[in-house]
Image (cartoon, rainbow, N blue to C red; front, top):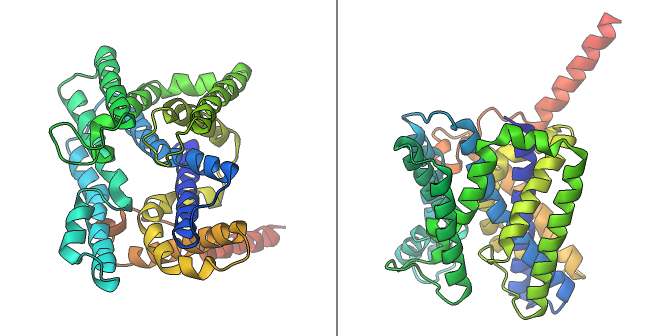
Length: 352
């Protein structure tokens, strides 16, 4: 595993938990009328697109020469089945425990992508697109650029009032054409990742990255000041920002050490995405009464993160847990890490 991928995955997952912490508090205490606060929320919405971008970068790099026969089967096992599992969990909580709409109606809506696990549906569809391109040797640059054009069209349609898919009565966010622009960007980065990594090592690269990132921020701020304050990851003006942010995170991930905490959180990132929203639903009222938005949001953020990791860890001990939370095997616990460190220290003392 390339270490910067872990860093990007961790930042994306923590950003979505932070964003949803602000959303949960707002649902209880009403909308916060503060431009800086709301602008930060808009920027945090990039986290889902970054996660999708990284997913395609990884497979484009790993499978650039050949694609295994079990490629689709493994993705269904570790991605789609957890989507189904949490669709049932959320339907039970929101349809039975809280008593709104009923279990079967909630489940049907969840399976259409109307719950926090919706991001899995476009990722899985993009995996299938990738498999088809490789299987039938259609992975040509011109075809990828054409797909990116389709993606831009769908993003434009969504940003101009077309809320559901053409010919399909589903939200555009769950349909793969909307994400084809990110698919193309990620495909090129992943396919030429070795050359891309060498480019990131040059001194000029960091100035170029920061410059383009600044320009993308100016674009979002301009649209924000002119009334586009929608907090979602499907904004057309997020495309350059998401791209440059991902590249910046890859650059930073290369420079910093591959710390245990990064590797640890990276293994839990997928599960954190799926479970944190439910935990926040339950515990948010206890933090909404704290003094000030900062304590409310970050109190909910850290608590929901800790509970998410704890619950995922418990589920991972159950047989067939990969069908519920994905494949997170071989995660060292923090206690085991401490024991290993102490054991290493004792061994070093004996050698002396």
